[in-house]
Length: 521
Image (cartoon, rainbow, N blue to C red; front, top):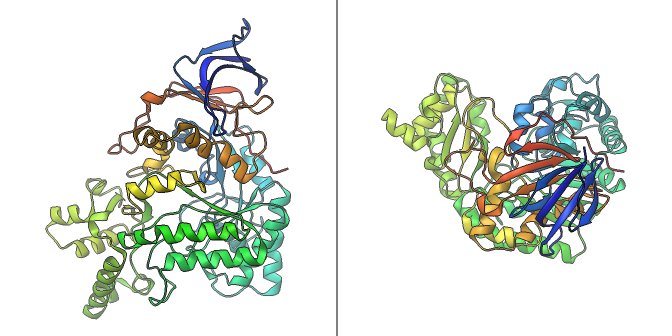
């Protein structure tokens, strides 16, 4: 079906000002752009008072683990997102040998994947089932799991060669690059030389390396309390890898967890700018919320988690834990009032959406005792939203910075409270743009053409003749999200087209499965 978009304000994905234009779409492609088009055989969409944008591109997603579940992808599509970059934080749902005995570990406990294999296996499985386009990266964690599971030992020569073969196979099959998740098992165990070899393969295929560093806060596990803030040490480590390999890097979700970390914003941005002055291609992505999803055990030290329940209750261990948690809270600048419960178990829905401090008051016990009780009730599997990732002033500063692009880093939860990023991230960026009177064309560029350029996604991200017709049509003044309702579908998105087919029509899903797995040529 041919489609004619009439009289819309066209933001073409560049930083250019918009123009009122018509767009003729034929066979899934933007055929003509101009004015006063007519075509009786086309479906005509009147875009008067609406904005026509390239379909939004999510720079950081984990939806390779969720594409089999249409319900999990629809909230992203309803945001206007037509393409998602997947395989981030060292996790990819492909890149593992089909005969690996560690396949059940893929996702490192955060995500589940049935019978993962190669990118070619993944492509066959999802063909004809996608409602969005996806851009694959291969995860370092997944390839390491294939070889040695969660083993913390250094890979021997043969194991490293096997891992790198899996990486190269994924890149030859069309992955756009790879990813590190240095805060997660098993990537946290990889020595520098292994990370450098992985990065060299990404560089060899002109790919991009996205990196979840070892620290997103002033204080983190694995570093000495002496010296510079840990978030800065983690960036230094990444820059050293760039110096040895010259690989192109996207720093994943630049955040500053805990109020004490907020003083590091300017020094971190300075490091990015200095690295670029030295000739290294590094930038970063952000989301618009002051909090993020995490596991309930996030502030518990590893020694405590390894103890049996009886040993945890011994007075000495309880006192030791109390001292460490109080020190950690002070050093980070967070408190139990910053931990919002998303899910404990099906038996405790009354806790969802409340802070640990609020629940402690309900139960008439101290916040630390309540927190540990919640850990036990959930068998350590509970989910929280952790606050003070940054504040509104920092978000605004990062939005204005030339090196930032936008993303969600969210996924659909089958139980408990949803992450607002799943439903609202990109409309929230637009709302912040309007409220702060920022140039809308720059915001759209950071959600479309800027990301396409950064990841070298051909034929996407711009309104250009000959480009794929991934298009989002919205009313700028109607865009509105309600932060207190994280799973509310945002207002203002009128139509979403994926490869020239109407997939969302005024929030309604049309049933179209026109998304594709994109391959790097």
